[in-house]
Length: 330
Image (cartoon, rainbow, N blue to C red; front, top):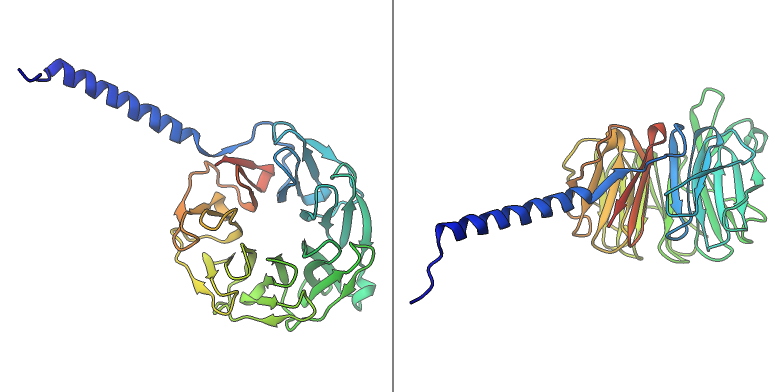
């Protein structure tokens, strides 16, 4: 006779299923973004960068820089000769890195153990207007770029600022570009192709290694705070008023993507062609699994503004107001 399950069997099976679901739910709850214990300080953090799985930096207001060598388990403050806000940290290889603080460029040649100022700009360099440096990237071993703005005595931006080096930072020259808007962030897909974003929906593009820059139509007046390109064709830009832009043709056209929440977005990163994250004010983090076509909101358990994001193949980091550091295990 064919075996017939008993009521007891169903009860046991139901209990087993419930336990499996409970375990799965607990596992999912452990995934995602979590605050790092023993954060390095309470200063607002403006940038985060990891050179590898172990070595990373967070930096922010008042010249604050902190370094980890154990993947973020512990942090040690570094002393650099500035009290200005640190806006960006970037390494072009495992040893040589650059740091922007106020109107100064710092360089490390020992894997970020020490930093020295290699260039400082003054108001006298710009007819009495004050420079501020926001973002640094290198398109090659020796060729690097910094973008920012120049402001008058009232703090009003009067011109854009683009400077570059052809000798790995030994000397820097200014390059005029076709906008006077404040420029906030840049990214290069390769040695030839790069993009800069800024106020008023500004997007600038080069396809000759930065020798010349042309404007691309963003079809928005919203300030764009961050741009990220996976290759010479696919990229994303984010900004105020929940602005998310996506291109698949190198910026010839930019398509606006609907966001599930209204916020100002400040940083976006795609560690691969499908998975991407963005962060913003109010502790917002959005995730995409389809190359940025659609986005879903993730739980962060914080309302602190998140100013910067760093993602790699295994982990993610977001930093922001009050010294908050969030870590994500992929």
